[in-house]
Structures are given as structure tokens and as C-alpha cells.
Length: 343
Image (cartoon, rainbow, N blue to C red; front, side):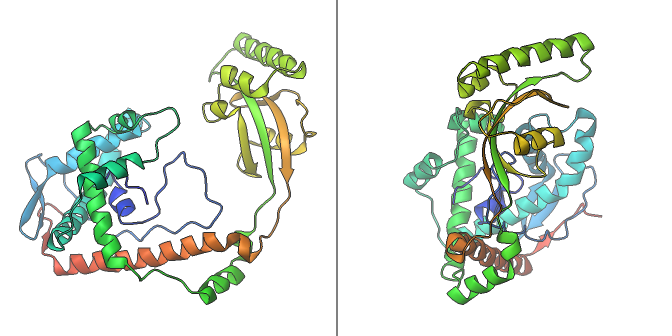
């Protein structure tokens, strides 16, 4: 399990819950439902120096909540419109406070259990971090609003909690062959693989509000690229150099997808075009697409052996979630937690 910087859902990630970044591919195995969120305190707008929680006698101030929220906002990279940022911060502040309280409880438990993170542990965790193609670890943590020292502290904290959770859940998450077969028999429809198509495309973008002249220029450019492809140009190279789709240009414009994921015009073309042919231009709200369908894959119901390893991961993670939730609930039940500013 990778340790991620502890922002928002990162305590849950460090504890072993299934957490994915927005740009990660969907898993073909069923994903673990997120844990039920506990009732969160509703906070008033208060000064940074205000004590918002007291955990076993240790005070937590609004400034610490604000600091975490600031990092979350930076990590989101402007995806929240400026006029909605205040509302967003108010909505998630209770969740951030609960995360910080949870972190305090888990770290106290780790200290009590004498759990330590060695320099080698930290070095390995950083080396194993998933980094987007073309990026460095430094660029990744800087994008999250962290400097090197803060980043290493976040990773170290996550590792410490991870070691605690692994100690508390060790040997309790295994599943039997009977459980695996039962899950397979009861979830054959969920496990069935839908019809998919593998296609690649080049997008020539039409800017929102573009006039007829700009649309015509985009169409002319797309037609020119299409003719190059018909004359034997390398599709992947042309896509990398010219496509306006940042999600696929680095991989030659390629996607594999089932029905219902793409805009209708794009999907219809990809599923109906003759294999390997360079299809006619397809216009969508994004612009003009040049599409080449590479393969069509029929729907199928996999055999038990094909999905067994995925089911094992799912059920073990599900069992771990339940154990972790019970453990955290027990920590909270034994702790003295007060929220002075809660309504």
C-alpha cells in the first residue's frame, strides 16, 4: 500500500481504505464502499487562535484546521470557483477537524505501542510513491502546497499510522475459498465485463463561444490532420504533437471504454467505425475528433479463476475496513474529546 500525503481523506488512505485520485483508471474489480462518515461537529466562524477541539487534554486550534484547508485548496488547483470557495471551506471544515482529531488519536496510540518510522522506512515510502508520468516527487508535493520538510513529515506520519493499523489488523482480514466462491456466485452480473472498444483520437478543440470563423479554422486543421493519417502518417506521433486532449495525447490518443462513458457522437463513431480505418470528422461540444477504432471487445462473463485475485483483494480490503472502523470507534469511545465551538 502506498502512503499518500495526509490531506482530507489521507488518514483513511493511510489506514488502508480504498482511496483513488480523480485521474486514476477505474478498477475492473468491484471497489470497496467508503466507510460511513461519523457525525461531524458544526463549527462557527471563529478566530485562528480559538480552541476548536480538546483531545485527551491536548488543544487543537482553528489555525491548524485553516492550515489543512489551505493545503486542500492548493491541491485542488483552482477547481473550486472563487465565489464558492468560502462555502466549500465551511462545508468541509468539520470533516477536516474530525480528520485531525482522528490523526491525534492514532498517533497517540502509535506512540503508546512504541511504533517508530526509520529513515529507511521513509526513504522506501517516498521511492514507492506513484508519481504521474513526466513529473517528479518534488513537483508532486509542491503542487499540494508542501515543502520538502512538510512532505517528509506527512509521509512519516502516514507511515506511523499505517504500521499501527497493520499491527491492529494483522491476521484478521483473510478470506476463505468458500467466501470467495459465494461472492462470485452472488455477484456475477457486477463482475461481468461489458462490451468495450479500444480507439484512439486526435482532438482539435473549439473554444467555448468561438465564432463561425474560428470553428471553420478548427475544422480545416482537423481535415488536414486526417488527410495526413490517410496518407500513412504515424497516428501516435501526430496525436502527441497536435491533439488538444491532455488526457490521451501522451499515449497516442488511445482509450478503452464501454458504452455510456463518452459523449454520444464520439461513442457512436468508435463503436460503429470499421476497424483500423480513419473515420470522418466527428464534432462534439469539445471540438472536432479524428477517430480510429483499433479493436472491439465483446461483453463476457469471466470465469471464477480470472477474477479470483480481484475478489480476494476486495474482500480482504472490506474486512480490513471493518476492523479499522471498529478500532477507531474504540479509540474515540475511550478518549475524552470536547468541541468547545460546536453548536
